[in-house]
Amino acid sequence: MMSHNRQWFTFKNEAGKAPELFIYDDIDDWFGVSAQGVVDQIRNMDATDINVRINCRGGMVFEGIAIYNALRLHKANVHISIEGLAASIASVIAMAGDTVTIAENAMIMIHNPYGWAQGDADAMRKTADVMDKIADSIAVSYTARTVKTIEEIKALMDSETWYTATEALAAGLVDHVDTPIKAAARFDLSMFNNAPESYGCFEQAKEQTTPPKADVQTVEPQSQADPVAIADLCSQAGYPEKTAAFLKASFKEDEVKVRLANYDQIKNLCQTAQFPDKAADFIKDDCLIVDVQNALFELLTAEDEPINTALTPKQQGMKQTSVAIDTQAIYSRRNRA
Image (cartoon, rainbow, N blue to C red):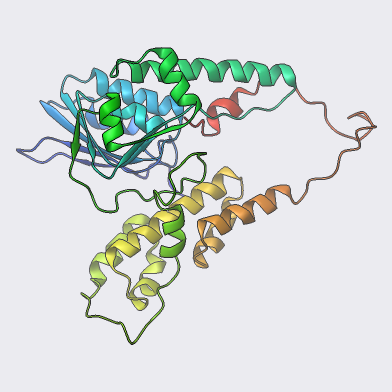
């Protein structure tokens, strides 16, 4: 089982330098960057400037809003650098910067929040009302930096809008476009509707998680993998058993980091689907993320039985569905923005 206390972001506070906060994972109070984790790091920090470096596809709405407010209200000057992707609630966090810079090859995405609910029609309508209110609170964060109205921002959110660096600058979401940062975006973006083709690493991940094929006719000299560095990466990530396999496959450090990130995502998917015990087998077999998603879907639907609509729920031996809104489903099951 993954430790709740594991740190999923990096904070550097070196003498003579502005502290740096790296938000390089999903916003999540269990499996990713949490508001409490960020607040614990910056609460008592006596610094003139804080640099926040973002490469994140989003996550839980209220965790992200809390991070936004913590950065916005800090006495230091907060400098945001979008180094790969600032999507969903991560784009809201980016708006907390006194200055916001984006790499020339990075992107920003804004959209409406996602949510889950169960119950009858009234429960669904109540959930929809809650989602509308969340969307309003998110839109305010964008209007604070741009000159657009709430209505204009909400229209852009409705259509899931993706901004290149130059488009983000023109829209007023960022202050400056910086030089490109190589291969910064490494995420499965299949959850979004309008993700630009080949952006991120949903397709790249499938290629990178397949062991490279040897071609004796085109092999060129390459630097040797550092066994100590790879062992450290595996140990720190919680997969020391993978060290030998990575070394045998001659993986370099960047390749190892991609694999380890995929393993973490597999654990996240299995936990969300309530099959945490399946993660070890998927990781052992180096399954692709898309294969894991398909396997979990089959597990989730394996026990589904057809419903005879001619019978009442009582006649079918079914429990009556509660008409009350399930707040745990709304707020605890990874609200997405």
